[in-house]
Amino acid sequence: MLTPTEEWRRHQAAALPRAVAFGADFPDPDRVRRHRLERDRLLAADAVDRATALGIRVIEVDGARAAEAIADEVAAHWSL
Image (cartoon, rainbow, N blue to C red; front, side, top):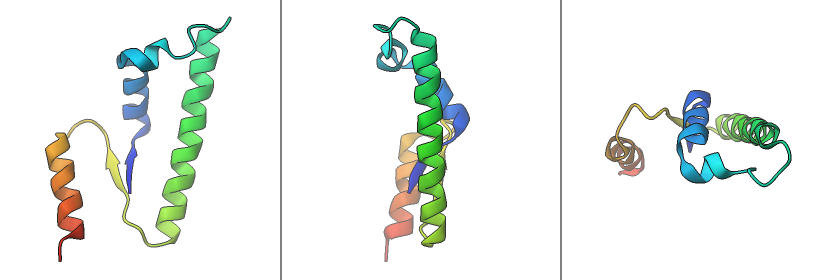
């Protein structure tokens, strides 16, 4: 299972145009964005907990490695 780190999730929320625009139509867009980040944090934490309990490998994505390196790690995990 791939999951973003908290820092990466915050970075993406601040850097991606579609994420920055999220909530712009609401009276308090900053509050909407904070709530979305908290919701995403809770969902990711729950997914990691459940995966760990089931013995499923969790790979954290933090933006430091290229997508190809992560894809290679996933492929190596699933290779015979």
